[in-house]
Amino acid sequence: MHSRLFKPSAWLGFPHDGYPVVSLDQYLEVRESTVNQIDSALSAARHIQSLLTFGVLEAVVEKPVPESTLRLDSTDSRTYRRSQSLA
Image 1 (cartoon, rainbow, N blue to C red):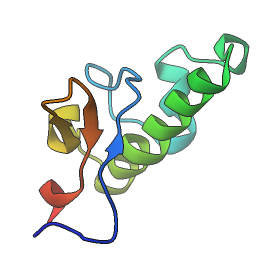
Image 2: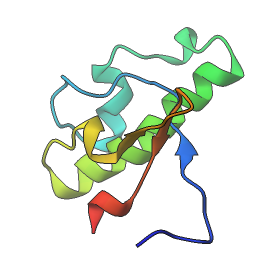
Image 3: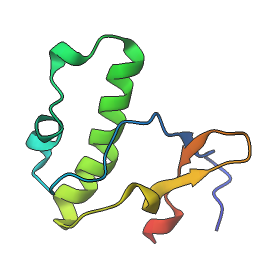
Image 4: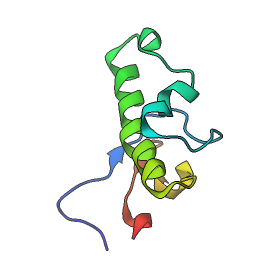
């Protein structure tokens, strides 16, 4: 079922796959991502989007959640986040 309230949001491209499942407070740390590496608003948004999407999901279910579960490649050459796969 497609939501009429929200359009899919653009995936900003922070690398998620290929890392161990960890607690939420270790999510960015295991990806060797520190505050010092955030050099722009876009970089900060990428970090936060991945942390609050995949980091939260994996911390709750304690299992890997691959990017492909929530990514939707579009015909306009952008990648979007989707939630229909979680149902």
